Image (cartoon, rainbow, N blue to C red; front, side):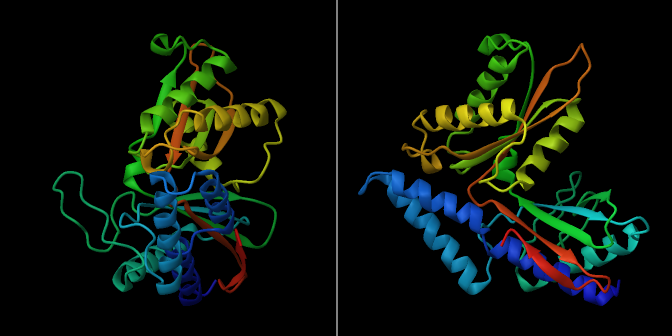
Length: 295
């Protein structure tokens, strides 16, 4: 790949992700807004959200003041130069920060000093995988700190909820996570969930569930049914947009599962806010974006 061409493609990916909400998310927000009664705080909150989305798209400005953790998911053929990709990605992130698509949002955990470029240990984060195709697929997620703070991991059995080591116990945990997020996670939110795994793999897969479109259906029927129940019961809690009360606390619940050790049963939740910034593209051999994802 040509380094400059790749950098240009990744810069545009950052712009689209930060400034233009994906259609599946916007459709879910529009559907949720129609469920709220007129002249209520919930309906007003949705109107503000909708204006925010439109202005960000029109002016190519960040949808949220917290442009979040920068998470690249890259799938390519054998031989993909990961170091070269990282170099181009870092350059695109630095450029995106300079022009305002990203806010200066990465600080040294020991000194508190802001790098001013969004570059530093762990920022951005790259996840690489391999497939048999010659093209390279890149997905980008920008995950804000407010919703990240609402992530949670349970170890079953969990006595405070009376949650046992079964799907009924998992469901109790997911509704508890929804309740605890309230307005702190900028509801309506999306739950990315992993059942099983260890503590680190559970969080990794729970975030990967957020790469699914909101209108897809889980191919595992048991998980599809659980997603539906959590969505229905979570919205019945009355939390509403931004925690103001109303009909919609969740836009979706996406669940995956990993094998676990007999001694462990983790339920891991990554909470995403309504500003669900997730975009992607397929790159050609030159590094140019041949097709955009989530369109």
